[in-house]
Length: 536
Image (tube, rainbow, N blue to C red; front, side, top):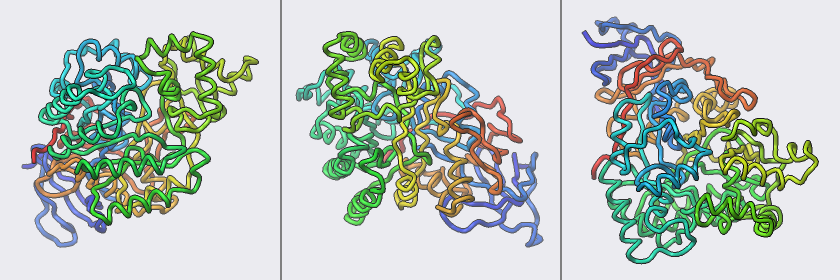
């Protein structure tokens, strides 16, 4: 007897091919047989210790979140329903150039402070690792869903160079190359950058190219949050394409979009740029989330010169009136590089979370709304928040365009990623709703993608980028990372008003053949493990 048979499922296998009816048999964490049209054919039907009647449900591979910020959440929260309930069975961590390995004691403290807004400070985490391999080993103690890891270039630079805006010396570059190689040998799948975040943004292209040469030689990929999604966005995309081609390294563009008023309706220009590169032989993929607002920290908007030296230096500059006035001018008049070269529009900046509960009155309001209530300039409100919350404030940035979102998700290189920040009292709903929103809103309601196309973009295409030989398809011999959903009712429950509501229409999710969601409820199973780079 096998472990489980899923009967009469409409299998959307992740390849993009048409759905078919089948019984799917699972044993020891893998798909052992697929019997198509078993009932109609009158053949001997497979038996198992447990059966699920999947009549009316779609069976697909588990979804792969190509851009996740669950680096500490997976360790902190064994339940992790935010992702498991969406049908996510694998997340890619280490995004945007900042995460928690490789580090030494100094760098770990600096990074914890710098990205408190993304993951919390981590008072409840035992940071008993320093290397990439150590972090992956920690995940292997048991997590809700599987996780892969990108080496964060900003963290590597902080470890070797520090938080200064200067070129790396030849000796420092050699050490960074060695750290990247070691991380890849220990199982990382590639390298990420946050080129509007310090200290990663201080790296010149020549430095990034040398690190990417190492990544490409190991079969990994480069995942940049590039230098601008606003003014100069097309030039920033072109810079990354040229850099990756020079380094002979596959490229995956993080949360690829065209934001701010300067880019309304300009997605076709980006797609034409990518098509020219793809047709010329470039290896490029991208991910997007199916929403228009972005999400980051309030401190991320600051100009790079104001962020040099690390969090304590930033706070010192903000408390100095003369320097603070210069920061304000860069933000409101010039357009800081932290705000993608566009003068900040405070009415688009909504506070989504604070580290200090005493500042909760600001959450859910834009900076301008809070400033108006206090009878002060928006900069004064923002500055107060930055200092009192010690840079831990998170924001929603309402600067996207629906026509750009739809155009990019139709592109042949597209995959899905939530970019979900799980902290804050009012997080972006993409953390809880990205994958059911694709299936419900953009497939069923709008018809932007067919169901088969959409599933492929959320499963086999990201698995191919990650070079996973046995995930991303419903195939015999593949791992049983699977999701059963009702195509008629699947929908994101999360909204901007209630961002932590769980989705509907996803009754069952399996990771490695074990139920993490069963009959719509989270089980206590922790079958997830690190998914490490497949050697060339």
